[in-house]
Image 1: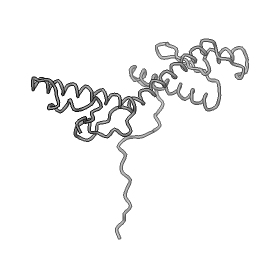
Image 2 (image 1 turned 135 degrees about the horizontal axis):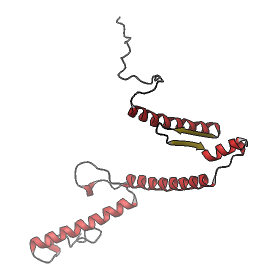
Image 3 (image 1 turned 60 degrees about the vertical axis):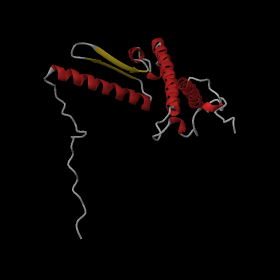
Image 4 (image 1 turned 45 degrees about the vertical axis):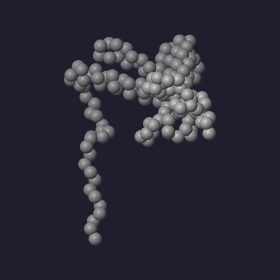
Length: 191
């Protein structure tokens, strides 16, 4: 019997590997690295603060002497509490932080409501169906907005067809035209 075990496929990428910590020689590479590492540092600090309930303040300077700070609940409150010798449990967020937090919550709620409306629209959107006439597609499971849209579209189509027939025959629509024998709901009146 043949051996069915296969050798592992060679990796096409290097994957997650430890990066050697050394100073980057090119200025542009250093700037990009600083930006990426700063973002990662702030994300890790936020995660630690949330998971552990700790108070965190980070202050870092770029090579160009530009300061970047992060803090939870607020970098000023954490540093002020540290400098004044208060325990970190006593630190209260500043008014500006609370205002920014409330504004962020409001923006989040508005975005959530917009997202829900968009999801509802997408759910109610007409899905491309099988080839054929759109009015022949099944109406089961359509939401009220879709049914209203279909109703209006059918009425417009009915008016357009009636106008074309009147143009073509140059006569008043009567029982011979076939359309006047239908009521507005499309039911045949000449049964």
